Image 1 (cartoon, helix red, strand yellow):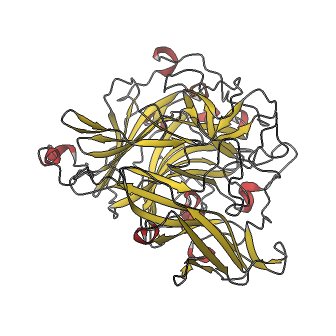
Image 2 (cartoon, rainbow, N blue to C red):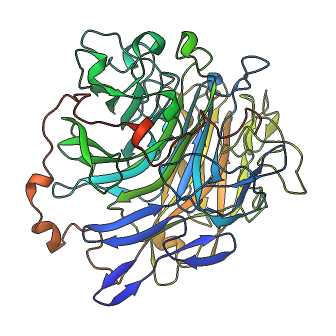
Image 3 (cartoon, one colour):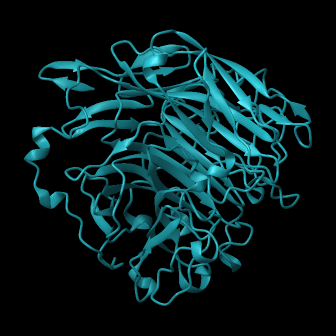
Length: 571
């Protein structure tokens, strides 16, 4: 909502085939004294995602106009490893048990195609080894006067097998969250929480693309011996150079103590990204007062960034080890996300799903990577996200390769783009997004032309560092919004070189409001009067576990939650 005195302007968000307004809907952009703020409440309403195999409940997709969501397709992330571990992920919105944002429990008892409009929970379903991400399409801005800020409810409990991260990537490129600075092996592992301790590994792919990841990690892989703690750190990659910021402690007792009984307890977190450093804070009492947990003297070199919410699983068939092993599946929950200041008054994408139609524009997408867990025949007459299981041998929507696994020569494809309309807003940006891969050993790509205009080269699979040959990578090509805004439909012409594969194509749009002056807050007089002390981050500090009491078991609003009680391995 934008306020000018007593006048209000509501930005609207499309849900299904209708257009609705109000703070209760997903993907709202509202005005604050320091600029535009994106808000996501994960309402259980929107395009149908999946029906649980039992048929008693359904889910909806994360708001497609706001989020670009995906999962890692590296071999270890999608290949079943045993009869009991099928290694399949999904990301969707479930109906919440209640409206309390600190409660991650779900109500998987309501079958409502498109949802019922009640409170929901954003879920990232992890199985064995995954990197699941949701990239906000609306870039966050960072200036010398104003940090970028991301606040959200996410689990207080993490382990060495399952955890969450917040990543930022420069907005002049688009990359999947799986290729950000997630902890990896060897030199790409995160330094340990204790002085002189060994580094903690993960499933990350190094060297990563340009990115900064704030990581909430389990501190010990043998918690039955050491107790359960959560620790934090930051990993940063610029031009292939990796650096870390970890405030190490002398003893695990100095870290935040937690327990598996907290698995469904969500805490209100806040991450501030300033040009000079990063600050992590939390508000466990939910009284609006954030306590700074850690600061990191790690500069942020970009003025506009994409924000990625991420859930990560690492060899969760045995991490953490021993009798404290918790199983290979966990569902990381998100509620009440806010990002500010953001660049655009609204974002959109074409094509989107249409209510229960899982393939509204089959020419654009071969396999939906938002859910590789629920597939097969329709349930109660409603399609599942995909007809078949995902494989590393998936050939995508179009491929130009006479050999395996393509066996086709689709050197050219034509797509019809229908421009979305946002009354009162102006088209400010556009980009053609797609997933790319190559024939093993090839270094090929393709080109994109609009109508009779000259074609532009598409960045190829090899433009993403450390991408496995068979894995899909997220790429994009910026389009001239002035050329698109003149007509309601456009013809996109794709030409693929030999050995190129392409899938999950879409066009992403950013809209500005010509009536909102200085909406990004950079010239706002409110900022000029803001105390500079609020914007300065200290160099580094050590978290004393006794300085921030979080007695979740005895003094919290949400008690008696079951462990990981979202859904079974087959839901």
